[in-house]
Figure 1 (cartoon, helix red, strand yellow):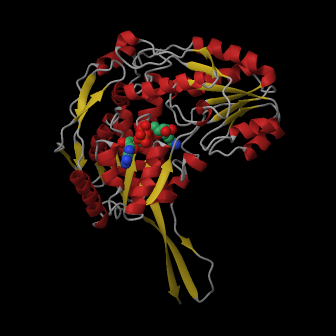
Figure 2 (spheres, helix red, strand yellow):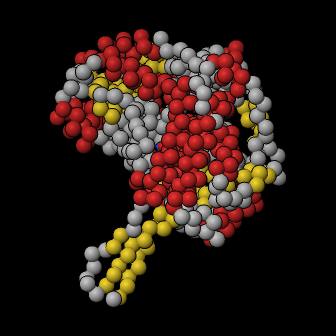
Figure 3 (cartoon, helix red, strand yellow):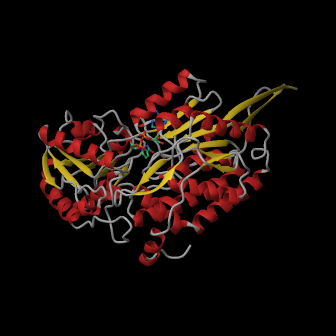
Length: 496
Ligand code: NAD
């Protein structure tokens, strides 16, 4: 991978994008239904099309995955061989990182600086990490009576369906694919209909790396048809999903209506970022708070979308926050200097604006932003927006916007801060800023969330689990814990 310069971005951004096809049983096929247009949020123009897989095509993909699993063409390969294939895939992703980053930005509007690291480079790292881990997984011998030998085998689950969203398709796709493939499963992947292109390219690279046909199948199309057909399949063993709570609920219903497949959900959040007056550096806290909600136009599941500020420093923090936000550069996400890119789609933009009118109607005060901007581009951009005086009864306090909108709520005591932090149905991420070690630990214990950041916001790594509690979902991506979703335990009880 060469250094990504603006000249190289501009060159890659003019390359035509061929129509997307379906990957079934190692072959790329045209879908039988009318293709779907792919609109770039940068200009609102169509850039290509993708196939819309029908129920029959989804069934073909699942059948191909089942055949590949049953005949053992992947799962029975020696671990060292599977590892070599996944390491080659990691190398190929890295080699094509610039191309993948630009393609992804054209598709979903994330600013290129962030996309390069968060998408191809993070995906390559994820494949490499699980490739390295796969031959370090052991079974167990249970401590039974002397007359018995009990072996606990860890086996792949079979056919995994992975349904992923549009905000970081490669990163989140890799979080599912890498541990699923590492443990010998076959996969049918369903990308979001508005961000499929990089995952289709990943499919090409996986074949080039030597993944046998049928082990990874990719079906693009709408959630209502393609996604539902996959989730209702009688032959999918495990369904892993990242996306909205509304879809997550449907997937559990589909499981109940079909074969009771196991469903793991990574859903949304309304994550509190809490600034106490004794924070080590209020200006630094405000800078991190702005980055934590405005990067990728707030379309980050762990975005710190609720800022809880101790009343005595509320105005000072707001001043820092407004200053740093005004200085953030919003614009074409393919410009290397852009810090806030596009909102993903026209529908998402309309949804974001709906939240803003509700927020002010319910008593919130607009401090900054609030309007659609860069209209001359034809694309979808929303000014970074800060609203103060947001109370627990307000829609903006309770519901995920998934846009560049920060809700600010003051508090007076630590107990009130904790109460407000937990006063939504979600439990994905959180942050707190304090110099008081005991307070930090009390808050870590009290906050109901999958992660608590202390004196920072948003740091992470492949070595730590990622997932939520309450209505933010179940199960974990990343870390060795992810293997639990893709493996079953089997006991062999042997009388000696
Ligand atoms: P979404 O639920 O609309 O779509 C996600 C995926 O589900 C897409 O592939 C879509 O086609 C598919 N889908 C939609 N309806 C379906 C149905 N009836 N049956 C089967 N599949 C269906 O979510 P989105 O708008 O793409 O993503 C944004 C959401 O994802 C936000 O709520 C965000 O917080 C969440 N998210 C969570 C995490 C996390 O790790 N917790 C990470 C990123 C995004």
